[in-house]
Figure 1: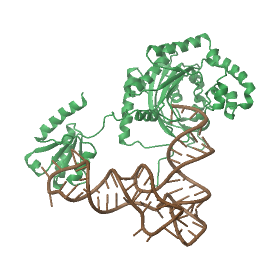
Figure 2: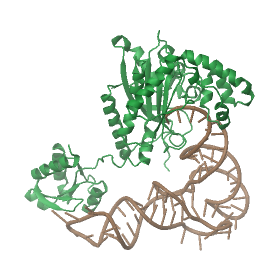
Figure 3: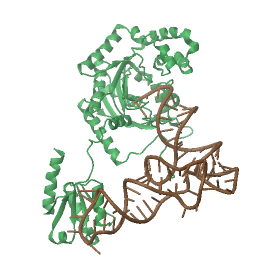
Length: 429
RNA sequence: GUGAUUGUAGCUCAGUUGGUUAGAGCGCCAGGUUGUGGCCCUGGAGGCCGGGGGUUCGAGUCCCCUCAUUCACCCCA
């Protein structure tokens, strides 16, 4: 074992895997563009208050999971971003985006940081892509966001994901429900676990979300927010569901789905994969009209968004055998040089081939022909091009198809032309 | 933060009740074929057995500490 290891909860992505990431990111870019979302890139750290205000100080993320530090003793505390939404909203408000146009559709891909114990599907540095639709509050907007997310899953070939959805109502609904909930739980105060007692005080809704089996049993008899919704909130939710049905997106209403972040209102949703183990949420999101005001804006900015964990997405794709289909980055030609004194000429040819747009690999270590051939085989080159004394003198080179073992002798120009035609066939474009 | 788990070669793992120079498969390198890969054969390199301390004539094996891994809880992507 080497002396230095990557920091706990972080990992390296080597080329084979990076190709998979690129594939996913390319799909995200394409579909986001198709739906009219444009990319935003924001800083990887923010002032700590942004997350305290935005995400909510009672949440686990803010309470115990943030990587915070103080760059200078008198300076303000800074935190590595544990999620994207607060930063995106901050950027939008700072830039005064809403004075330019009322609606903004943004998407992002980036790394996030949370100080949790790593486990399957959970790291301290992880990545998400997501979209934020800022400036509209209609059910259509929420449906748009969910549809884009589901479209990404579909385009990647994923099967069997479960979309759960719920509504949290507006602040009035929640206030009335909160009182009802506290009243209902009051007689049971003594049997509540510690976390639930605290939640009952600070954020009663989250009791419903408890995964403690004893609490779940108790919760199953508790009142439902759904029954406390005012008519407009109910209609809003039903309209979202209507759009999902229209688009053929299967969902399951889960009255206990609350989600951990304070800024959600109305529709909240989560997508889970049964292939992930304990940490089975692959994506989630919802509507968060109050976030802008939390961040000091004079008024609410109606908004909704989703985020998908890329590591968990890739794990699920792996389990479903979807990664094998991702195109490889193997070279087309491996240039095999017979003798050392032809090495310079070999470099010259490799350069010519690359100029012609043909992906070419060549031995740089002066190794034996056998070693070069083995290497060509290992890296899955399509062809071996031999350079020996005969080729050097005649200008005709031997080209071997490493799959069929067929070998022909052609001029370099003919080889370039041949390979170009081959590649057109292979890629089908 | 809590609980459990596992640390032996680059990787996956053997290693018997503590007993000489710690093994296998795969991978890597070289040769068998001085102009041709995969398959096969032969050989080679590569380990302070995670680190520290202790028990013992003797520790990869037993005990303690520590570091790291993995899984789970809490919660989330």
